[in-house]
Amino acid sequence: MLQIDGSKHEGGGAILRTATALSAITNQDIHVTNIRKGRKKSGLRPQHLSGIKAAAELCSAQFNNVKQDSEEIEFKPGKIEGKHITVDIDTAGSITLVLQGLIPIALQASEPTEIHFRGGATDTFFSPTIDYFQNVFLKNLERMGVSVDLDIKRRGYYPQGGAEVIAKIKPSNLRTIHLLKKKRVKEITMKSGAATQLKDKSVAHRQISGADEVLPDQLPIKEEENYYNTKCPGSHISLIANFSNSIIGTDNIGKLKKRAEQVGKEAALELLEQQKSDGCLDKYMADQILIYMALAGDSKITVSEVTDHCKTNIWLIEKFLEGSFEVKENKIKWTTD
Image (cartoon, rainbow, N blue to C red; front, side):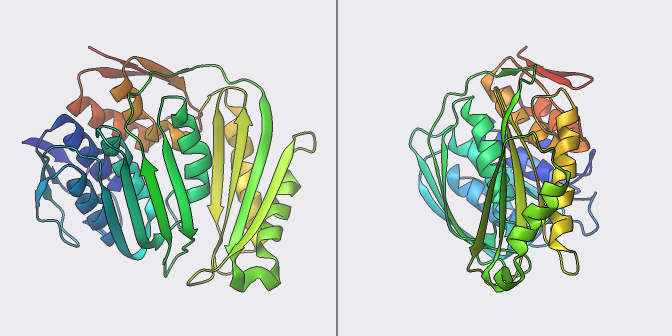
C-alpha cells in the first residue's frame, strides 16, 4: 500500500483528488494520512466524501475511514468501468473540484461515463468557476484528445449550492502536448453571471463594466451577461483569452459588501498579469494539466507561474508513474523513464 502524506507542500484537497485518481488508474492501493493539514480546518469535508465515493464507484474500489473530518483513508481500487453515476453534494461544495478527480479515471474506461451532479456549487470560492472549467480547462485538454461534455442544468452559488450538472466523458487515448511559445491573442470573452435576485441591481453588467475599465481598448472583446434561477444570491465572472495556440483565463466570485465593479476589475487585472508572462498556460491550468501530461507521455509546456499546487502535483504524480518532471523557470517537461 502506497503511503501518501497529505500535509506535503500546499497540503490541500488536491492531494486527495490526484491520489485517488492515480490509485484507480495504476491499480495501486493507497493510504493517505494528514489529509488537508495545510488548511484552517483539516480532514475530509462533504465535497471530498462525495468525490472519493464517486471515484470508488468508477473503479469498484473498497475504502476505509471515509467520513467527515477524517484525516486518513485507505483506498483499494478495482477495475475501471464506464457507467452512469449520481453524485449528491448537500453543501455548496465545488462541482469542478470533484470533476478534477473523476475525469482522469473515466478516460481510462472502455465505455463512456456519465456523472449526474445533484447539489453543490458551479461557482464558489477557492475553485474554478464552471465557465473557466468549460472554456479554458476542457478546451486546452481537447488538444490532448479529451472529450467532456457539460450540461449545466442549474447554477449554484455559496452558501446553499443546489446546482445540477451532467458531465459526459468519453474514453480517450491521450495525446502528448507541446506548448512552448504563446502566439497572438485573438479574442477575450467575458462571461458574467448572477442570480436573478440581483438582476435589478444589474450585477452581471456592472461586473463587466469593472473589467472594461482596465482592459486595453485595442483588444477584441466579446461580452456575455446572464442571470440564473438559483437557491441563493451570488455572482461570478470569468475572463477567457483565446490565443492562436492556447487559452488562458481568470475568474472571480461576488462577495457580500463588495461592489460588482470591483469583482470584474480584479478578474481583469489578474488576466493582464497572466498575459504578461510568455507562458502558454495560466497558473491555474498549470497544476491541473500535469496528470494528463504524465499519462500521455513525453510532453512539455510553459506556464505563467509554477505554484505550490503545481509543485504538490509534481511530487505526487512521480510517486505513481514511471517518469519524472523537469522544471526550469516557467517550463515544465515530463519525460518517461
